[in-house]
Image (tube, rainbow, N blue to C red; front, side):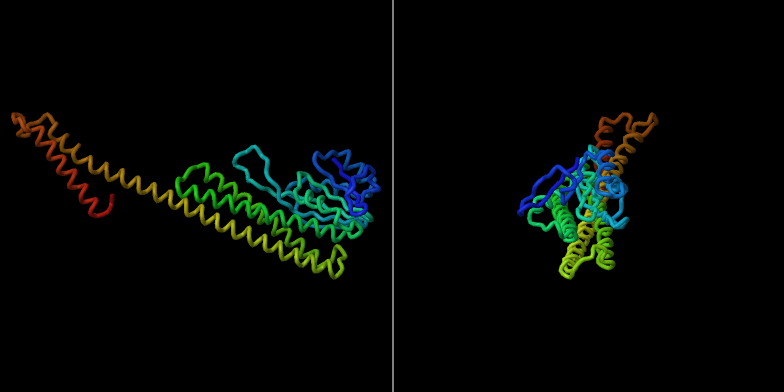
Length: 312
């Protein structure tokens, strides 16, 4: 689906003709025919439009025939039906700068573009470089918001694990850990992209825009640091709970071993007196009571020794 927007009198207006639009936004479902028509009408290399379809596309920029392409990673919710997948993943978004238009291509629904659309009426479409920086700003803000949500989910799950260690909660923590891996990788890639944009001045920024880009680099670095901190905390938490579970298992096994040892001696005594051989108690009426009392005495003595050694 293709959305065409134009800013008239500080109002965002959707238009029908590609040539009249200042901002062209491609949303799923994406069709190959739309790519071909748009590539021909706007004189854009078709590879620039199809790069967003590869979910593993790295953050980068390039220029061909005076058409500039910027690929940057952005976070989104994962709507996979697999319960072991990450809650959040990162997807590439392509930002294409033509002679008079800015084109954005999204292979999934992108919250950053939605936020940009809401504030598009406050933008100056003739300043395409600033519009690119504003889109990147929304992407960084989305990373921050999702990281805060992830941290809240982690705290809730940790509180539940203190009460009972269930597989479902551990699985949810694992899904959060996967999300953080995606975030750390994407933010690190975006940081390299922004620093390269700063060094090469690929967007031909003025002094004000350069300062804005510097602020974006700082914000992205902050998001990366947050993701690394949350990932380290979660990794330490999972290791701690794994140690706790292993320690509890060892305690249970130790208690079962002690119980087995304590009960083995009465079984041994009963077996000895139950043998079909002379033992001196064949004619005694107290033989049963002697065996029971002797077994209890030995079992209690061994149990007391284990308690004294704090083994049980």
